[in-house]
Image (tube, rainbow, N blue to C red; front, side, top):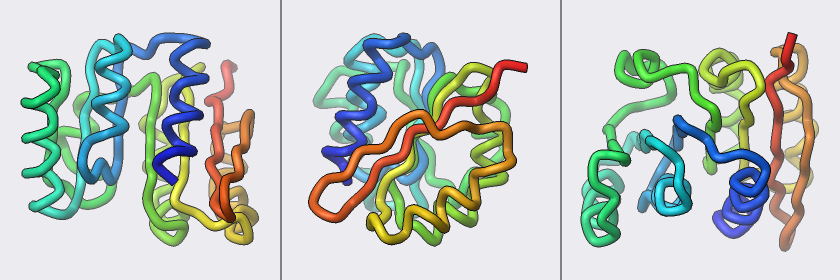
Length: 160
C-alpha cells in the first residue's frame, strides 16, 4: 500500500507541488517525508500510535526535514492542530478501509478546493465501500492504482 501511495504521490507532485500536506496514519512518516523532500512547503503527519510518532520523528531528524514536517499523536482527523492547519492541498491516508470510510466526512472537509486526497490501505474488493463513503462530498475520483490485490484511490476536490 505504501508503494501505491508513493506512486500516486509522485504523480501528484509532478502535477502540482502542494504547499500543505496532511498524512493521516503516518506510521514511519515515509509519505510525509517524501512530500517534504520533493518540495512540499509543509507536512503534518499524524498517528494514533505513540511508537509510530517516535519512529517518524527519528526518520524526520535523519532526513533533515526540519520545521517543514510536524508530527502529532492524534486519533482520526478531529484534533485541533489538524483543523487549525487546514485546508490542505493534499491529504494522504494509508490506513485500513474501515478507518478510511469512517474518516470520509472529516477528510473531505480538510482538503481545499482544487486539492487532492490519496487513499490506500484497502483491498481491491473494498473499493466500492470506500468510494461510496467519499461520493457526494465534493470529491471526484481521478485515479486508481492496483497492486497485488491492494488499491490506491486519488480524489480531487471540485472547483465550484
